[in-house]
Amino acid sequence: MSINQKLSNDLLDIQQIAIKVADEVFNQLEVGMTEIDAVNLLKESGKNRGISHYFHYPFAWFGDRTMFKNFSQPLPILSKSTWKKIQLPKSLKELPHFGQEFMPSNIKLENNMPVILDLAPVKNDVFADIGHSKFFGDSDEHKNMMAFLDKLKMQIPDIIRTEKKINRIYSHIDRLIADNDYINCHGLYPLGVLGHKVGKYPKLKLPIRKFSLMGFAPEAFIFLLAQNLTAPFYYSKKTPFLTADINQEISDGYWAIEPHIGFDNMGAKFEEILIINGNTIEWLSQ
Image (cartoon, rainbow, N blue to C red):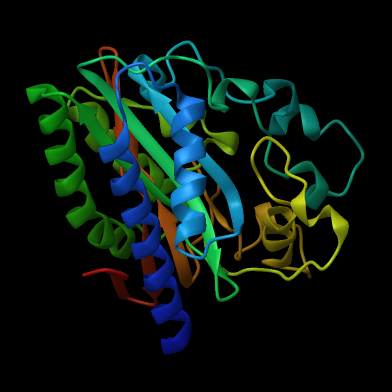
C-alpha cells in the first residue's frame, strides 16, 4: 500500500477533533447527568467543530456498563453457525448486528464512576473512530487499567508484525489481557471486533442519509460492503474486521484498534487509528 499523505492528514485531523470533543464533554459532566445527556453533549461539541455526519453516532457508558456487565453479544441468533444454514449471500450475512443494550441509557452519573465515550465523526469525506476512557473521581484501579492499555498500545504494532494473521493477533492480545487478570470486553461488540478499518466515507445523497440503525449511519454498511466487491468480505483477505475467527493475514490500510478490558465492575478502552503498510506498522498519532 502506498501511503496517501492527504488521507493520513485528514484522518489525523478528524481523530484529533474526536478526542478534543470527548475531552471537552468529560469536563462538562456532572453528577446526575445521564448517558443520553453525555451523548447530546458529544453531538453539540462535534457540531461546534463542524461535524454533521457520523459513521456511528456517539455512545456513552457509565459505571458497570463500561464493562458491558450482563450484556450479550448483539443478536446471537445471527451467529455464523446459524447464518451458514441460511441460503443468503455471505456478504449479506455478515453485516454488523446491533443490540439495544449498547444504546445510551438513563443511567445517572455518580461520583467515582468510570466513563467511556465513543464516537466516529466524519470530516472531508473521511471518518475516524475513537474510544476515550476516564474516571469521574479518583481510582488507582482505573489508573492501573489505563497503564496496562498504554503498554498494550506500544506492543500492538510488534504483535501484528509478528503474528500477521487476524485470529493470531486477536488471540495474542487476548492472552495478554487474561495474563494481567483483566477480561475481554470487546468480544461483546458486534461480531466481537477488536478493530475495524476506517478511511474514505461513502457519499450518499439520499433522504436515507439521516437514518441510523442502532446508532450506525447507512454509509457504515456501504463502507464495509465496499471493502471487497469481488468476494464475500468477511472471508476475504480484505475483510474490514479484526475478529477471533478470521484465518487471514491482516491487510494494509487504516485500522481503528479498540482493546476493551474489564475488572470487577469497571471497564476501560482506547481506540485509535493504526496504519498497516507491509512491515511498516505505526500509530497515526505518534
